[in-house]
Amino acid sequence: MVGTGKQAKSGDTVKVDYTGSLADGTVFDRSSADNSGKPVSLTLGAGKVIEGFVEGLNDMRVGGTRQLVIPAALGYGCQAVSTIPANSTLIFTVKLVSVG
Image 1 (tube, helix red, strand yellow):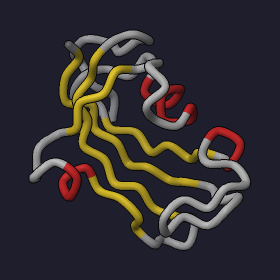
Image 2: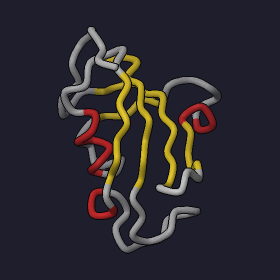
Image 3: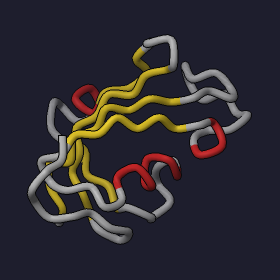
Image 4: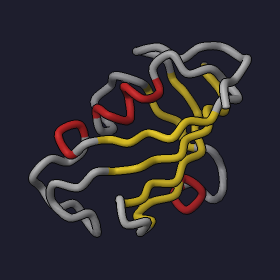
């Protein structure tokens, strides 16, 4: 779904709701679990989230929803992180709530 609000770009602080899963459907993260059910705030391009997530949000509009399929090279690469195995493709369903 394409949103109709402000467009996100590098350097913007955005609020998102997301669910992250592995290719087999195993959910490894939800924004609602990380932030008491509220959208998570992050700054695009600040180096705090994986590159594929930043690329996927770039040019997205507020109110829009996207499915991001992120190859390992733009995710965690050959490192295992928590419950995410090394060399994993990551799938995020993301809704852009606001651009500040």
